[in-house]
Length: 235
Image (cartoon, rainbow, N blue to C red):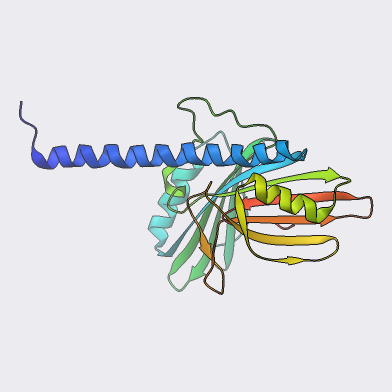
């Protein structure tokens, strides 16, 4: 039986896209583990890791918005809540899991004339090692994978010199220093590592894909935040 050329091209394209999406998920899994390995190498106690996806759609019509929200809220494994209203600003939040290990979906609606600007985010969090088993990936709904993922890992360590810890983390990430701010008890730096494919440009046009934030308290405990390509939480 001969396969129609158009049909063949469709199937071939679908397989390529599916493989690409699968590969991206594997990479995200590996990247989380890269940071957890860095923490282990530097005796950093992990508090939490997060994988964050965000997409923005502008000028969404009311009918399309209704379909979007209805489709997402069909997942009854999430607990859903709403704040605000569609006249000004509305936020729809879905939560699954617990404070230590879970998933959160956030849909933010802002009225823009007769339509809406819609921001959607999908966030996975945990505080344990992510086992990279063959074929295992993060199960990210397709509508959230339009943008690149952001990974953030937080932890703490007591008793080490803050500048030495910064240097050690950069070395563990195989990252070169790009730019940063260094004070006595606070360090915020950006670096470039070959472990991660994506990168962002600084205001001066330099590429970076790693950020590290270190804050030392009076009891000599250092709060550590690491992320790629940028840190998406306060630190």
